[in-house]
Image 1 (spheres, rainbow, N blue to C red):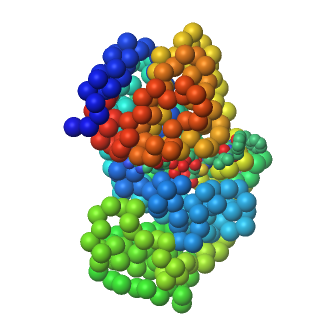
Image 2 (cartoon, rainbow, N blue to C red):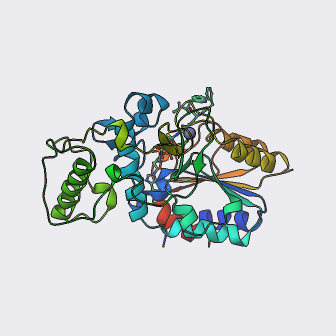
Image 3 (cartoon, rainbow, N blue to C red):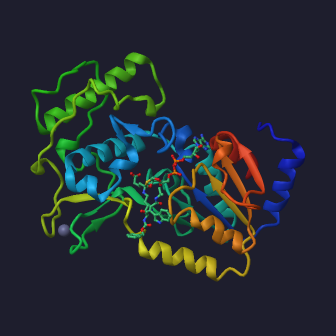
Length: 317
Ligand code: BJW
Ligand code: ZN
């Protein structure tokens, strides 16, 4: 059970029960208790790189092999992770209330895998499991590609007993296999069960140098394929933005906005909080960190501090 004053929880529950049009904004903190690291907190590093530094078209331009290994790792970890009780609680709320929409910044596929009704779920930053062409003149894309790996050089083998710390003398597929084997056996060595503690940021494990031929190519134009996520400086998917704007504009009133596990620092995702507020929404924030409530007067009506995986099933039931 969650330790909030009963009257506080009750005032929220009463408002929730009286609410028709509800909107949720999700961030990486929702998947934290599934074992996936957030961006700006602990675990937001991949090797010596800030995860957000790799999430740029410039990083891909400079070193597509590095960026693909980062995303290959993220896909692998996301597939190993399971939706937590909060993903399911949100999916249940969506099934009960067709006027509830969710805007997720997460690319990990955990809300879809919790059977969140897809027409009520808007993936603002795309998905790790979508692939698209990196050429801006080519429209090739494929959705929900759960094949792992996309190309052999990005393969991540099952954890095995082998400890192979040196991948220096290997290239391409061999090197990637050795890298992940080393990391996975290091993980079992430490008896860690949370996936985010598989320590890829350990600089002692050299990174394989993948060449262009090792990476996936577009079947239409032969340019490099890239992950179907939204990087800094890129537009959010137009149809998604249009659908969300249409929902907001056509709402005479929004009753409730849930802001869950996000630092709300990234635009335009964060701007939906103010848009909902402008339509009268009361705002409930669920976050570990009290500093991550939306800035401004009258922008947070309930703050539930703690793990979303524990709090949401309690407050949404
Ligand atoms: C828990 C918890 C637990 C932990 N329980 N809670 C206006 C003003 C300023 C800047 C801009 C602006 N407009 C545009 C910009 C630039 C930029 C931007 O916003 N920059 C800011 C950082 C300053 N925005 C863009 O570039 C966007 N595009 C755009 O605007 O295009 C228009 C345009 C194009 C061209 C020219 C001009 C204009 C695109 C943004 C794309 C963001 N992409 C990423 C990567 C996705 C792929 C990938 O995953 O690799 O999206 S960055 C990263 O941040 C990722 C996330 O979805 C996003 C949000 O992060 P999130 O989810 O909030 O994570 P954290 O780590 O920040 O927070 C976790 C929270 O959880 C914390 O609060 C914890 O306390 C909490 N927590 N454990 C509950 N157990
Ligand atoms: Zn192409």
